[in-house]
Image (cartoon, rainbow, N blue to C red; front, side, top):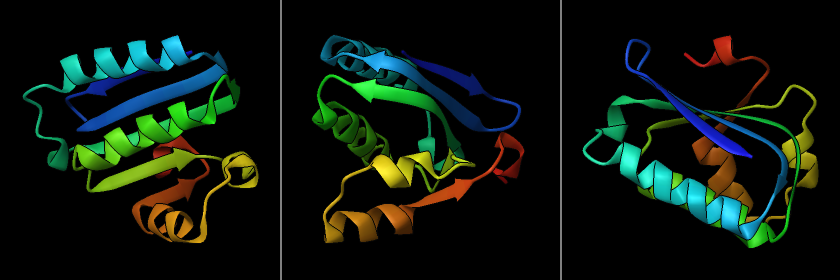
Length: 114
């Protein structure tokens, strides 16, 4: 399951990821995301992703979702990952890992996203 919430007051977009994510779930989320983000100036928002333990039907779906976030121009992207779950399970090539670590900051709580 992937859910999205936009906080206009905080200028943050919150994404929650959990459970088993099918390719259809990923496509549906991208369609909803693009609709909600239409006309939004993403450069003024911070993206905060809070994943619980999750599995994907196809790992390329998560890569596609992440690339969509990068392409929409968020200046600051945060992943709430206190147990380092994402970095331990994410399989990235060396170049992808450099870009990921340059663009994304790992934090322990939502409140750390400043």
